[in-house]
Length: 435
Image: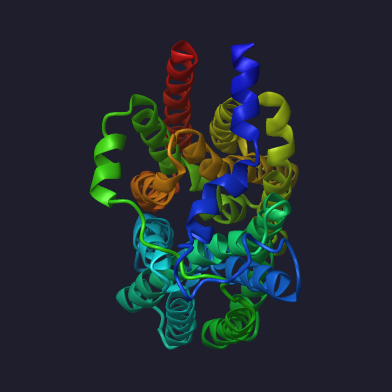
C-alpha cells in the first residue's frame, strides 16, 4: 500500500510540477502582474508561446543532438589532424554549457529577465553558427570556440526559460503542452542531422552547408522570439545557499545526483559515435547518415510515452529500467557489424534514452519537499550532471583512439552507465525503507 501511495504521489502532474514554480511565481501586490488568478490554459497568446518554446527546443537541444554528424565529418574529413577524443570536446562542451547554464538562466528568469535571455541566447547561437562557417580545415580551436563555447552558451541561455514560461499560460493542459514542446529537441535532431549530412558531405560543402543551417536556425529563432510572451514578472527565489546546504544533507538527493552524473558519462556514446561506428564497420555511408535521425525519432517517441508508462511502473522504477537498458544497448554496440544491427541499436537506444531524459526533471521534483526550492535544486543537480555529459564524448574518444578500439570504448561507456543505474537502485531502496 505504501508503495502504491508513493507511485501516485510521484506521477501526479509530474512534468508540470517541476517547472510550475519557475513559471508562475507571482506577487499579489505587484502592479506588473496580470490580474487573472491563474494561467488561462489556452488562448492565442498561450499557444503562440508554446509554439515559440517548441522552436527554441528544435533549434537548441535539437542542434546539439545532431553533433554526431559533425563528429563523423570532422574525424574523417575536416579535422583529420585531431583524434576523435579531442574533437568530441566540441560537442561535450556544448551539452555541458546548456545543462549547467540553467543554474544562471533559471535565477535570471525568476527575476523577470525572460526576454533578455531568449533574445541574447538566440543571437549568440545564430551568430556563432555563421562564424563557424568561416573555419578552415584543421582549425580546431576556431571551431571549438564558435561551436563548443558560443553555441553552448546561446542554447544554455534559452533552454530553461523557454520551458519555464509555458507554466505561465497552462494549468490543466500543462503536462501535455510541455511534452509536445520537449519533443522539439529530438525532432530538431532528426531535421538537423539529415540536413547537415547532405550539405556537409554533398556538393555544398562545409562553409555553404553550415551557413544554410545557420540561416534556418536564425529564421526559426526569430519566429520563436516574436511568438513568446510572459504573463507576469516572477519574484526572486529562496536563498540559493540555504537550498544547497539542505541538499548536502539529503542522502536520496545526493545519490540521485551521483547516479545520474555517472550514467551521463556513458550516456552520449551512441549520440557521438554511432554514425562513425557504422561507417567504419563497412555499412553503406549514405544509409549511415540517417542513423542519428533514426535515433532521434525513437527518442521523440520515448519522451512522449514515458509519462504514460510511468503511471503503471512508477517513476523511479522506470528511470532505473531505462538507464539499465541504455547500458545494455551501449554494450551491444560491440557486436555492430551490419545494417540491421545499426538500425536496431539506433531505434532501441533512442527510445530508452528519450524515456530516461524525460524523467530527469520529474525525478528532481519528487525529491523536493518544498517546491519553492525547485528551481535551485534543478540548477544544483543539472550542474553536476553536466560534468558527466562533458566527460562522456572525450573519455570514450580517448579510449577509442585513432585505432578505433570499439570494444574498449563501448565497454567503458556501458559499464559506467550501469554503475549509475546501481546507485539509483540504492537510492530507491533507501527511499522505500524510509517510507
